Length: 197
Image (cartoon, rainbow, N blue to C red; front, side):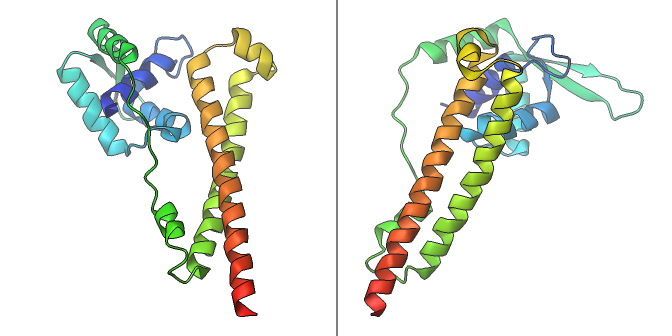
């Protein structure tokens, strides 16, 4: 997957600022949508998003329009074109590549038998605390998306379902990150205590 597909997906799933389901976003709104929902499976800096929007517009996959605002700076709004939808349809139909984990902290844990584990334990606990904060954020986002519906009802008939499902995956991942971090920190701390005796 390329950043282009993540941007197209965010535009297709979004409803912009007016809630009309148009999938039209300013660059700023797109960056916020990424930060809240898409970032749990695709990380991109705002500068990268703006550059990708420009490329997509040049290729005809998104269309931008200039919006004049009286009390704020003018902005550009972007939406997916038919060509962009076709590009995404082809991407959605293609067999996905297998995902993998690339994580510095796991590399450190891998070498726990050969290094001082005190800093690793501290980093594991920091990671667990960060995961806990993300769990709370995902919970708030999911509740807001569901509105008055309970989760099972939303899963049956709520919209938009795609962002909801990816947030559920993000929530599960962060719970796993928290639990793994706390468990591994406890194991390493216990082993340090045993070695000190």
